Structure formats: C-alpha cells, structure tokens
Length: 370
Image (cartoon, rainbow, N blue to C red):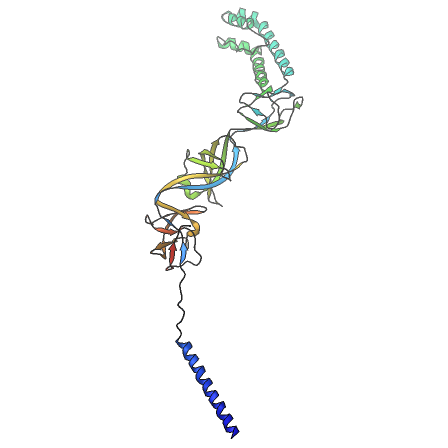
C-alpha cells in the first residue's frame, strides 16, 4: 500500500514538472524579437564649384650661378695686390681689379724695343728725305711725337708701294708689331672682374709667384642664377621661353619669380624628359640651393580640384544624394602630387570631404559639419 502511494506521488510530480516546462517553452516562443537598428554614418561634404583652374607643373632642381669664371694666368710674375682680400667669399664689382701682377720686367722690355724702333726710324730718315721727299715730313713728325713711356702710335701710311718696300727693308714693321704684341700682353698683368660676383676658390695670395697657365681662382655671379629642371616631354609644346615660373624653398617660406630662358632641343631617351632652364634674380639666393618650381602650363575651364585620396579606382567619386552614397564617374584632367583636377560634375554636387571607411553605394549617411 505504501509503495503505491509513493509511486502515485512521484507520477504526479513528473506530470506537474512536464506541464511547467511546456508552459515556459510556449511563453518563451511568444516573446517579441528585438528590432535591429541600422547605424547612420555621419559625413562631411564639399560642394562642387567649377571654375578656371591653372595647370601647374611642379618640379625641382639646384641653383647654378648664371656667370662662372675660372681665372688662369697668361703671364708670369709676382702677385702684387687686389682691390679686396683675394679669398673665397670676397665680393668684387664689375671692373674692379682681381689681381695685379708685377710687370716691371715686361715694361722694361717694351721700352727697349721702342728704343730700337726709334733708332731704326732715325737712321733711315736721311735716305727717306733724299729718295722719297714727299713722305719725309710725316715720318719726321712721327719721330718728334715718339714717347718711350706712352702707347706706341700707328705708323704713317706709305705714300706708294716703293716707299712701303723701303720701310719693310729696314725691318720697321717687324719691330713695330713686336712692340704692339708686347703692349697687348702688358694688359694681362692686370685681371679685372668681368661681372659682379664673389670668389669661390682662391689658389694664390699676394707675394706668390704666378706662372703662365696657372689657375688662380674661380668666381661666380652673386645676383643672377639659373636652375635646370627636367619636364615630361608631354608638355614640351606648352613650354615657351619667357613663361613665368614661381620658385620657392622646400618649406615654402620664401618665393621668387623666374622665367624660362632656354629649352633644350633634345629629349632624354631613358626618362623621356626635356631640360628647361629658368633664370631667377633676388636676395637670399645662393648657388647650390635646392628649390621647387611651379610652371603654369595652361588653364582648364569648368574644372574642380579635389584630394586624390577621395578617388575611387582613379575615375570615381562618392557623392551624397538624398542622404545616400553613390559613385559617379569623373574625368581626371590633370594629376598633381596630392590632388587632381576633374571635369564633368555639375555645380552644387555634394562630394565626400574625406574618405569614409567601408563606404559603399547605397550607404545611409547624415551630413554634418566637422
């Protein structure tokens, strides 16, 4: 009897537990599922405003002095003096004396040759008076004006061919042209600055013995410079002499205006570039400075400039239309280092101002100002 009672109680408990579990399962099945909420990405936009955009080609190069001179000696002698300290960094104006070389020995040689010429003329004057009386007066006047310490004057012109042969036979012309050659060489004992500039290399000092053919110094102009840059051959037809170029330092803290003065006629086969030479003047410029050059090639009408990071596969851009992203195809007209000039978009078109990670066409966005 007791066993039956226990069995009945256990059966009731099992049935009650099964009913309770079934009820819980039904209640859980009838609970409402959570509604998924889609996140809306906030973006910033820029509006297209088409205008005329100049195409500027950026390149770089080193400054070189426009005028450069290596000074060599054509005579031998002691370096006497200079208008300034003959050392690197010294500035000379055009026409100032770079070097004055002692010429006393050379001048003495000229005076000796002049004396010899004077004697030759004096010796043939009596014969000239007897044989060619019509020429005697001009030669007598020449002797009267002859000065040993002055530049040699031109010889009188012979009246006829016989007189000329008479003068030649006395060796006058040979001595005369030897003296003129010595006088011309005398000018090489003084070296003057051919342009205004600075000494960059000095190999002699006052008191040094200078020899013929010896390199004395190197001089460069200090105010006029040129810069050689390489430009893609595709823009060869657009590069014209006289075109304005803006030069600036790497930090873009200083700028100078230059002009294209020469364009090379040969294209480099390996790089397909052409050399362009830019002339520039101004304060703060030094030879060897590295500058960047902006060459205005041409201008594009109805164009807009955007960051290259915004491009989608080089010819697409994300636009916002009714809070939805879409991709439009564009016409890249000119690529710069960090931006691109595009054409084909209507004014007022809203473009993404900065890249959005995971962006895709149809993406829901909200425009905000950041």
